[in-house]
Image (cartoon, rainbow, N blue to C red; front, side, top):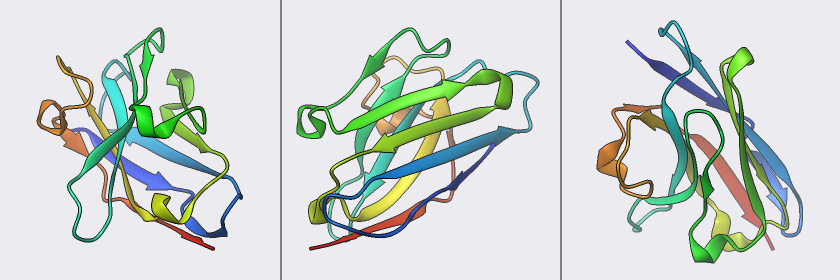
Length: 123
């Protein structure tokens, strides 16, 4: 029943910033763990940020460094990903995911997915 819709992707130059949003519907409350994944052509889908249901735990893979920040506003049923200092290698389709997860970076722990939003970073 959960539906996730991403927005905020676009075409930017290296060094620019973007803020992605993911809005949840079809559920009485925003009480699921959530994450952002990305997938570039020819690559495996990879997690770039995780946030627990209440926002008290956040995790990022090492390659993210300090460039990305995940947050959520449960009152607005919205998940965010602030991306700074974007690089060409960040070019990918970014997906919002939700579920009751055990391993934050494991894509198979997430039951619900958005359709993705394209982020393209040029040199």
